[in-house]
Image (cartoon, rainbow, N blue to C red):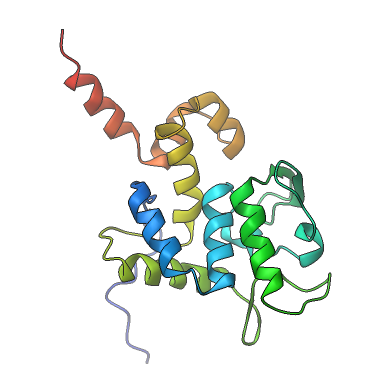
Length: 196
């Protein structure tokens, strides 16, 4: 009988990961991945869109080849089956261009390939943990960290309002969005720090 992993969560337990909250840590990971076009593109697209890992790894070359900053990427979400329209920013476009220039590819190829074909969501989880460990970032991180990092910085760094982020994430309540982004405790604490 196989031995159980003591670090594996119990069935039914909720396991959450955190966003990367400090811009200096984002820059450190980008620097770490500077010579790895695939990993850098995965990281940059992950933190500059709110796509799930399953949707990122499902991208085909034809969906992003020749795209310009400000243009839309249209895809069908794997989890919900809904069609999504994501506007790609300059950082995404540059990362994709560098990735495509680093290898030969056909339009039907998956954008993110490993040695044995398209990478998996489990592998994305492994990569994110490896990157955060490499820069000595403490906390709980995984594939969902990328999507959460996007939302966290949209709210905290760029000041996007919660109703807009609710729509982007397709959440049913503001509380769900605040909990998801791990910012409600921070915002509550900040209220109490206001002096009269």
